[in-house]
Length: 472
Image: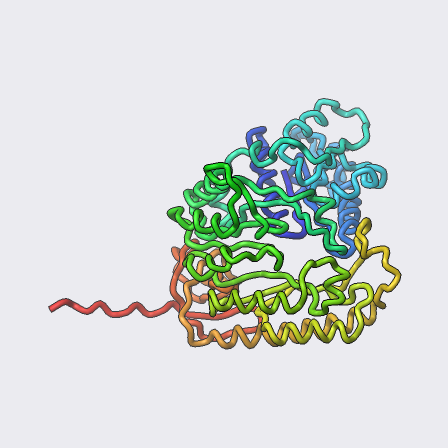
C-alpha cells in the first residue's frame, strides 16, 4: 500500500491511520506505486490548483494501472518477466478533501480511480477495498463514499502498531478535533470536513499514552479549528483545549506538547493560562490572522478585528513572555486596496512573527469569496506577496540570529545531510543542526549551545556538562 500525502498536518495523520487500518488486512506500507497493490492519494483542497495537481498524478497512475493490467510492474517494463509472480490488479484510491469536494466530477474525469473516499470515511477502507476486489476484472465506475457518517470514525480505527509508531520517529501528530463552524468566506473546510467534532479526553489520552509507550516524545494536537476543542471529560462535561493540555501533560514519556491550527476567537483565558503554567506546552503558537485590515477581515467573515488580535497577543505574551508566534496571511483578497495591504504590513511589524505561511488569494469553488466581482489582479497580488514575505523573512532571520549564545533543549528527530549530522527541533520549532552528533541522541532531548542562526535554521554544539563538585 502506497500513500501519497498532499497538504496539511492532519492529512499526514490521516495517511498514517489509513496504513494502520489496512494493516490487519495484510497490507504493508510501500515506498513506491510499483511496489504496491493499493495506491492512495490523500488530497488537500486548500491550495491553488490543488485539484489539477491530483488529476495530473492520476494521469500517471492511469498508465501505471494499464501496465499492471498487462502483467507488467510499470509502464517502463516492456514485457513481464517469464517467471515473475502474477501481478495483482491494483486499486487506485483518492481520499481527502479533493475527493470530498469533487467526487462525481472525479469519477467522470478519471476512470482509473476505483474508490473516492472522503476524510470522514477512511475507517471504512478495508470493506470498501474488499468490495472492489470482489468485483474482480469487471469494469465499473468508481465507488464514492463521501457522506458524513453518523458513527465516530476514530472509534473504528485500530490502535497504531508500536513498531510502526517507533519507525515514524519521536514526534507525532494526534487529531483531537475536526471540522469548522466559522465559515470564512475563502475556505472550503466546513464543506469538506463538516461541522466541528471533538474527541473525548479519554480517547485522546489513550492514543497519547500509546504514542509515548512507542517512544514518541513530542505530540502535536491537530484540528482544523483546534482551540475550539470541546470534547467530553470523564464526567461527560465539555472540556476546553487548556484542560486537555493539562491532562496530557501528566502522561509519562510525553515531554513536549504543541497544537495547531487555532482561531483568534477561540483563544480563551484557560488556554492562555496553560501557556504560562504547563512546562510541557512549547513556547510557540501558530495563530492565523489572515489580514490586518478590518474591512478585509469583515469580508472574510473572520469575526474579529485587527485590534482584537493585537490585544490577544498582549495577553498571551503576558502569560508567556518568550513565546514565538507564527501566522497565516492571504494577500489580494477580493477588494483589497493598497491601504488594506499596508494595514497587514503594519500588524506584522507590531507583532513580530518568527514564521508565517502566506499565499495569494485563489478562488475556491463553492465559497462566497469566489463569486465576488472585485478580484485583485494577479500581478498586484504577486507584488504584495513578495513585499509581505520579505518583511516576515527579515523578522524570522532576526529571531534566529538572536538565538546565538543561548542554550536550548533540542529534540533530535531527523537525520542530517551527512552521516554524522542530526537535526532537531528547538522549543520554538526551529530546525537545529548538530554536526558530529552521537548517534544515540536520535529520539532524545539534549541541551545545545546555539552558535549561529540562519534564515531557516540554527546550528549548535552539545552543551558542556557542569562539573560535579565533591561534597566536603
